[in-house]
Length: 313
Length: 289
Picture 1 (spheres, chains in turn cyan, purple):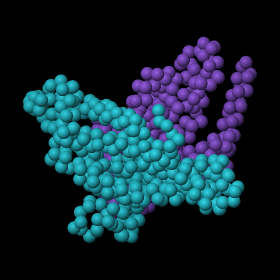
Picture 2: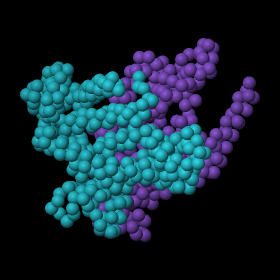
Picture 3: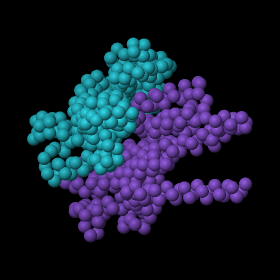
Picture 4: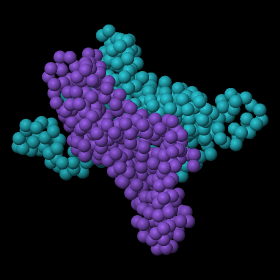
């Protein structure tokens, strides 16, 4: 397991290096690119040239790349032209807000997906199975911005129970908790169905195994077969899928955060991308890819820990 | 020989009809097919179905944009007929989504076949590249690509290729690795067929089972993504209607005029639900035989 972890760590470092090169190549390769973006569309070529020289952007790309990586590794993420402050001042708050949203959604998705997935998968083809399956297909098929519109129409406009914007400002009429309800609901609606179907598939698979047949034939109650025998093995397979949802919950929330004007990481990426704020987009991309790759490794390690028969090559 | 070929054709088309008949036995799949066909019909006959020009501004309607006898679904923030915009918007999504999905399949199948068939360094290079693309969250990759290339229909398609093809490469590569060890491939090699022939004519047809279901799911997924790009302001440039963009332009006014966002949201949801239910029906059928 140690050797495996070390190998994955090496792969992680290589991935991050390649990703950083790709980002750099895409946004900073041409020397004039950064300066002309900073000066806006009305800058004269002379101004662009002057700024390029002042910022040292006319040096060879590999030199600038190494300098950039060095800065990032030292914790200097650069200056955000959109937020008019250092990227460090903005990015960690935003990440924290998104983690709040993500952890609440995750805490709801995990138990719900296991309950519904197991209930559907324990008797394949039953009425309960069909209804849960169809319902989860429908909820995952509704785009987040559409379900946001639907929920807002019902709970904000018709019923007036919840606020339509979740700016996390505590002074207004709505408490922070009430502001979190709709964003979390949209995330759970969109993601839950997918995880339920994965858990269901794992459960169906396990229920067809000979040892379940043995347990049934030796006269155990169905309840004991499901909870005592099948559940654990179905969970081993589902663990990776469930852990991978962390990626969606942190990175995929761009849409949810945009609908509800939530000051999160995803909304920050979108805002900075729309205003060509290269430094923020680069830093955010590096962080998000790091989170994705680390969750993948955590998933593999957890899988190994739960299922010692698996040997990774 | 010709006769045998014809017999084969009749047989395969017979199989197609039998499958279609099977679909009628799956009510869920049938419901999905009806939803998808409804929107295909609307998209084809958009010029005859739409009561107004989708981009024409009716300034009198600005004072009262709510649905009425003249504008069945009301008008939007610029006085444009929402029904006509939804009808024309179905064209946008039903042209861009299939083209984008098809292009992603061409790229994905080509690289997946090469990777699984040649293995060795070809596989190593392709697999590492897909790993790296897959380590970007899809939505972030979309934002980066559109930010770099600018919003347009072509760039939306390029973005979909970058996001979807790594997943297709993985599926095709897996199947190819399995198939290349089977006797019919060995037989083809001994006949002296070229590698291209073996990949395209021998192996590719055997990947169709999983790919048919995947393509249907992926069409729905691409539809969501195109809607999301429109919603984020990264889709097609205005004024031509696309459903995501329609929501983006009006959701700020939801507290006063919810109908402006509600109807396009219903339109895109029903199409994606259609694709997903159809995929589920197809999967059920493919499991049966």
